[in-house]
Image (cartoon, rainbow, N blue to C red; front, side, top):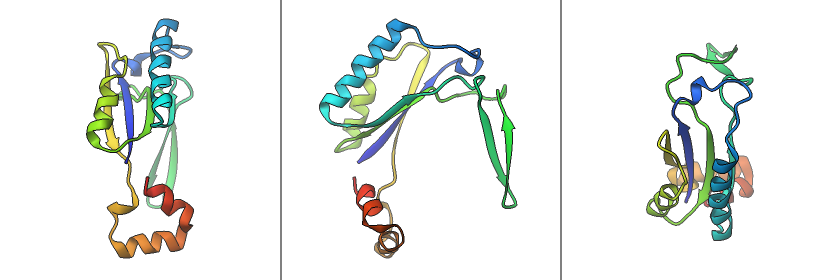
Length: 141
């Protein structure tokens, strides 16, 4: 099963352009990320700049898109980064999430990514037919 662990640093929505984490925090997170890699569960990860740094939102209405430049003062929770991991169970994903070297002002949400088995057998066949075996195989992770 694949899970995304999403980091929500509190007050990140108020961070100024050019803000970056301190080296001590980066070192702790780097060690954690190395553990994920050595365990063979890490598929992807990255940190995101604060919303005040070149952010935009694209909304959709009536089949048309609209771009609104940030920052967004009404934002209450802002994503600061993410990991995508592949593990055997929800419990294992939560175990990894609980080991994140987060500080008092951070929260991590753990969510499972869709996989092929979330769809009925007929839809699974259509996905394989339309997108090919590579996409279908990836969705089985």
